[in-house]
Image 1: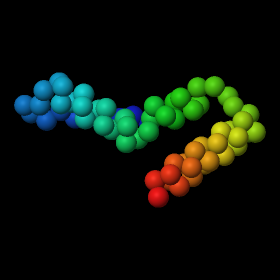
Image 2: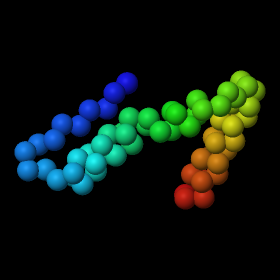
Image 3: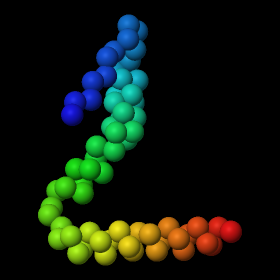
Length: 64
């Protein structure tokens, strides 16, 4: 999947880089790359998912 940023006339390189970073974050490209960098067994994935759910639930209950 390619991310293309077209420069408008009069746009500085800083603005173009800022647009690119925003698109990468919206697309969650880096998070996907980090997840797929190494193979994880299905049991480990499930354990991590459950731990994340517990953290979110705990955080949500603290905020109330």
